[in-house]
Amino acid sequence: MQTFFCTNESSIVTAFGIPRGITALVGGGGKTTLLLRLAHELAQAGARVIITTTTHIFTPDGIGTHNPATPEEAKALLDREPLICFGTASKEGKLSAPILPMETLAACADYVLIEADGAKRLPLKAPAEHEPVIPNESKLVIAVAGLDGIGRTIGDTAFRADRYAALCGKAQADPVSVDDIALVLGHADGQRKNVPKGARFAVLLNKADDDARKNAALAIATELERFDVERVVIAALGKQ
Image (cartoon, rainbow, N blue to C red; front, side, top):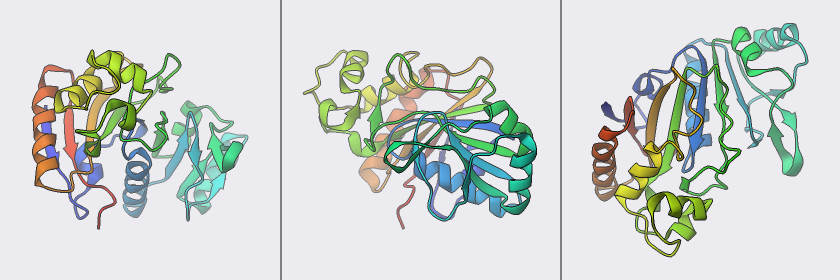
């Protein structure tokens, strides 16, 4: 397993080794921020990039949003807008999955970046039975966890707190530890749930805003050595 520190000047694409095709993001604590960071970096390098979802996302600011019905329409849109969002208008101003299958989208663009999980903007997440929704064609799955969850109660900081507590063998009133975050990230019923066979699996430890959180991230990375994690990226995405 490899561990990388990333700053705002670092290439997050290089840190994760983003492959052509489909990359799916799961977990909590910064998935959308990571999605947009990857998308802009790839587009600035000249790639054709689609961002989308298998669940629900807010319409991204400054990026054209469409829902093509055919591959030809998708390709024509990408000719005009190499960075684009595809999705179906849904409730509360959100987008749900687009009309076209993810496999079809992958044939139209260089990269398809998918938000495949929801966390209600909380730092941590444990999936329900129907989650996450990861396409079988995914080449890479990145699980995201927010380091600001450490020390707070599971009930306050984890989406699906009952499931998170059960995975950790704790009560919802108990504080989240470094070991808890590592366990849920690596667990087959946690963030490794539904990862397709043959897909790479990586972790983003986000919100490493100070030395204490960076040290905590390194401790989590050490614990993740016992799981099948290809690489861990430690960052404070969005912090200027």
